[in-house]
Length: 166
Image (tube, rainbow, N blue to C red; front, side, top):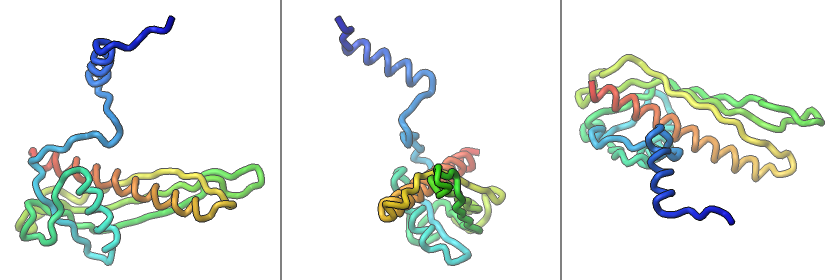
């Protein structure tokens, strides 16, 4: 007869998992001390600023529209992205691509003074490519890019939190 999960067993399991540091993916809570942030770019990366703003907003941090309203700002200095073939199938055709993105940024205070030296946030992910389903593969590539931006935003916010708590 299979063992039944009781409330006590489930509570014990959740305590065990949290005690060892395990947490759900993207469940990291950021403190309220981060406040509001402003994102800007020296170059024309407005699409990146928009996507990073959305990712930062998902973590519960308010993104404002001007630096005068923000407690801190992120100045995106450089953005690089690349796509390379990760694996080939038995027909020597592309089976997977790897996307790499890197953002070099500065953290500025409300007066525009750097709070930390130039930093880099980067992420990479692999996705399957199906030459018989180009639309599906393109949609998968867009989802992977979104996850990359979320990972980069998390790194930036974690760095901001460390700088703010110094």
